[in-house]
Image 1: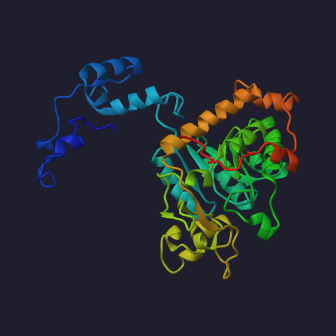
Image 2: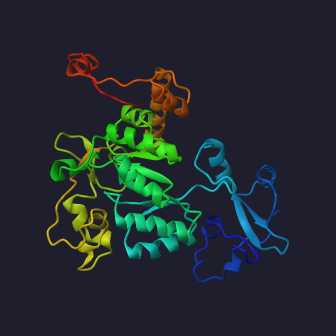
Image 3: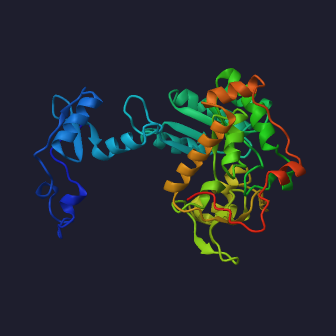
Length: 376
């Protein structure tokens, strides 16, 4: 970027070149280019690209230096996914990354910012720590334009510490994940509904949005998290079974197709040398142990489990199913927007009721046999 534009090489230019590894790039690149001048608006650029029937439209300055690039695939995505999270000026997709709170994470963050990072998430099982507070203050001093999401927290007091440090968003949840056993083993944590309601009610006073992280197993849980005050939810186990997620698929003893899934607090994750980059000391420095502040422990104490989740097919079908389910639930509640839902809960118009065992039995399926197929 910023250098002289001489030509373009795409995959189709070298697809049938047997000696493309040794030939000079000038022998295959296209030099008869259609370009647009810097400062052109997106609508006019789209017209030029459509008329040229090319895949790319380079944007150059007065000296012929490349300043940006528009592609036909970008236009297609913008057409089919108009509400995707993009930067308002460049229409570029927002990029986020997670780091820890160790000194070496500062160097990693510098490289991520240089690569164009927009949001950084500080990943810790207990966010209200001196390590995270110091990291938030350092980030805000070094990169004031970078949004920082802190956590995890479950109380107002924990949230207050991070908000005071300058955090832009919060993750809420401790011990509520599908693969998490923190509440059982450590006797530390909080029911997720109470956590989300109390933290978001406090954080919204300071304009800090919150993510409900953990316990989301179906559409109903997404709706509950949003209704309780969260602006979005985080889904780990729910998406872990999709085709695109990492992990090995296999057939269970019951004959069902499942996918391997493990919590970051599981012994397997904390002992995984690959997570720490390999080497004899990786067990003490990998992502699993760092998240639970146990890098120096000679004995590892599990706060998560390893197992398998149901295979859910492609995420391209599963995400639309979740979105459609959320819309139907909002419709059933009589809500036209998330803002209206939050206001209705705060004003007492929308209320929550405890479902007793009898109520759950009444609301369940009452048939001799049935197939529970959630989406087509």
